[in-house]
Image (cartoon, rainbow, N blue to C red; front, side, top):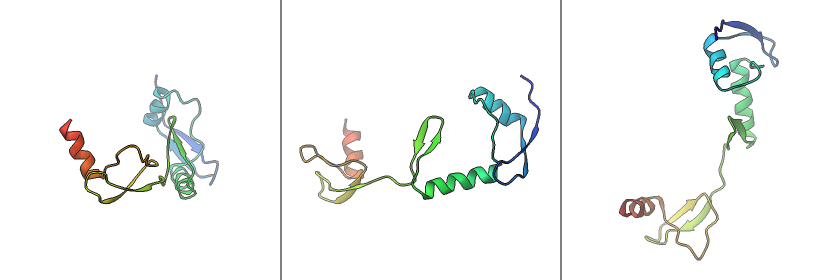
Amino acid sequence: MNFQDRTLACSDCNCAFIFSAQEQAMYYERRYANAPKRCPACREARKAKQAAAGNPIQNNGCSSFSTRQMFPAVCSDCGKATTIPFEPNPERPVYCLDCYRKSRAAR
């Protein structure tokens, strides 16, 4: 396909911005149906606002969270206090990052 730079108006601030041929090619490859509605500055501001609110930001079907819930735990190997991204199960061992890396390397 032959893409050419296009000038679009931002739906938030009404400023004109360039939708470059490279961006259009990327949108085409990723099968995006619509051109962007917001200028790059407004897009970044929107992402920052969503991240500050703790809302997931959708990106190609993947979501990222600004904060992740962490749980306190005690390492089963060295006894050091640590935090883990899942609720610990008393029937299974929990390792700090250093001990986890050691156990992975031993396997």
